[in-house]
Image 1 (cartoon, helix red, strand yellow):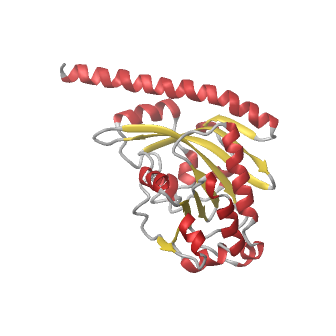
Image 2 (tube, one colour):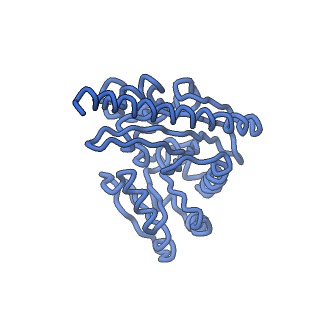
Image 3 (cartoon, one colour):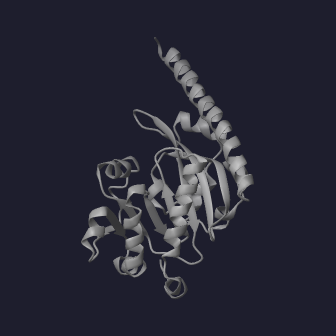
Length: 269
């Protein structure tokens, strides 16, 4: 097989993958649209149509936020970009390590936004491509709880081998500026791993009641990241609407354990 044949084969394979993602998300869109209507959420099937609350957030460090045209995309990512568009959400949430390094190109689909148990939530899928010697692609779901005031930069993940593999998948082992912190409660340190750019602020925000809440929910294995705009849960796979509900339940409870006085008085970076 010659070089021309290889190019044709790659184009056919890429086209088949894009059609698969399109078919998958068309099917998911129907389920998420139905769920949104039942729960008074807004719904956008395609990321390029999304004009919700995340688009209103300031872009963190505009020079670093990988704006469209500011990077070299693989041939596969270029085709996907023309097919699906670019991710508006990732540009606004670029400072969150959980999703930052997951693919050279990203776009979003099946976006739902609304109030859940007193908290404003945005749930969305992310489709990504990574140009490497062995190119890879995938899709995963995230749920974001908006915060009324800035939160410190903190990554909280469960202990264990599977959690470590997830952090490896997200390229999270070298998060520059983040440092592991321990708490006086040994049982919490055994169940949860916490990293932050500001240990003092992290200690302020992660109270005894919040640690108890996290330990009570240790079996749910959610990975979450606090940041200036809110709290993000991200997975390495797509979630069903029922699983999205569970993630939002967890986030609503987590937000409820943040000291409201801190939200009013602390000026987190």
